[in-house]
Length: 558
Image (tube, rainbow, N blue to C red; front, side, top):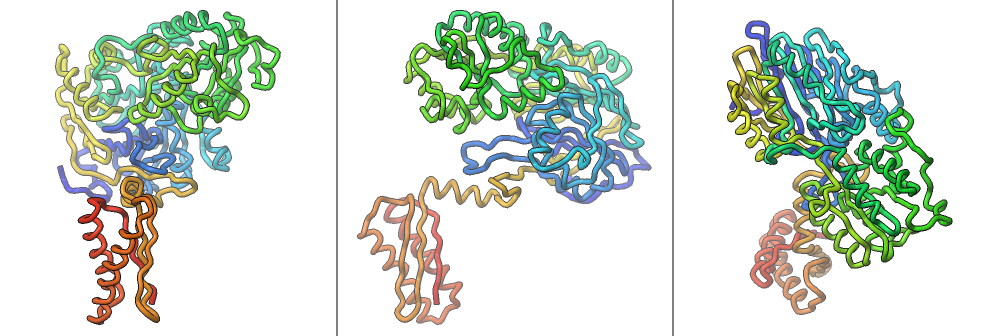
């Protein structure tokens, strides 16, 4: 692999090749964005976000770095969106305003959700060139890229993969998918088109690796609906169900179940309401009866009410979390209620979800969650489905995508067990420049990639160093040392999160700091050096006496 470079690719006229550059979503789950470049034209796919891990203290969201796109902005000819999940469109309000206005193609529900997100940021339709494309549409981007969308089943309507026609050959990208044989909307994955592409010749397959470790097939959404109805039918009191707000198929099924079980549905939570409103407006969600507000359920018996609420990932401010901890302004859980968690924790959220579940048990409500109850199914295909796509596409080269390294590697191993394995498979990382030609498939360099942290109103003003300081402060505490030089040198300290008030230790720290200051003054050192000497002396002393490494902030006041 060559050294990292931000330079534009060399002239491609002599040896034509396509460059595939994942800026997010490769070797991770989240913030998906992929860049294709041929010559002087760039096409971009998706623009998602990720949610912070526990160690990323205070961070709200994570979006991908787009330095490469900003440096080559004049080459961008168009953008396509595969579906409306946050990890594929959630970063667009942070990304699109920083780049030239180019056509952005997506299916109706996808664009409806994008418009809703852009409006939250004060962006109007005219600011972004959104163009509707059905799940089997064909569009031309620039002179080098032809895109044919392919319908693929997933946990949201209007989900697509695509066939990208380029001067070097065809690239087939599955997008997020599972091969659901009983999809809620009856729209099956277009395996016939994938098979046709395989016969025509697929130079490169980029395929969803999320469930590459799971044998067999992923359960159908219809099976989940049957299990949910069985559970809800046996609930005697109020039912509170949480799932991903974007799982429109699941929510539609629950609405239908509630109607059959003579329950009225109450939507609780901002994101639930947003997705439901957009889905209704575009005809992707049908209501046998209008939603009720919580204020309107007063006259109904408990067995006549079903709440659909946010909180599937244990988010502290979500409806379910506030219910579990008794912080909801209008609703209180009580014995006889039932809570259904129709989801699995995203990696990193297990502890938060388990905390909520334990609190629910303590409240005495009945709790239903997987795997004990089969009330959830992944939106991603397992090994049998991944093998089906590989066998139909028959790619020359293979790039496992949308997964952590273990998922990618297991997907690559699966491909090698098939009757016609790819000629070569690469395990790429974000920022890799994957060069693709008729007989060429290799990583030739890197471009800038990584995470941009969103913290409150700040975008990108929190670095990994800042996060490390936050972690250190949360683990070891903070000591602020202020050395006042005039009229007589003395040191004041303030500590937070270090130890409980300890006058003797405070006096010792002040003495060590003052000795360093007085020595520096006698030796007529620069104030910056005196400050550093104070820092070093206190650091060594605190580590020796307490075994701890608090964040130290030294200040000199002359």
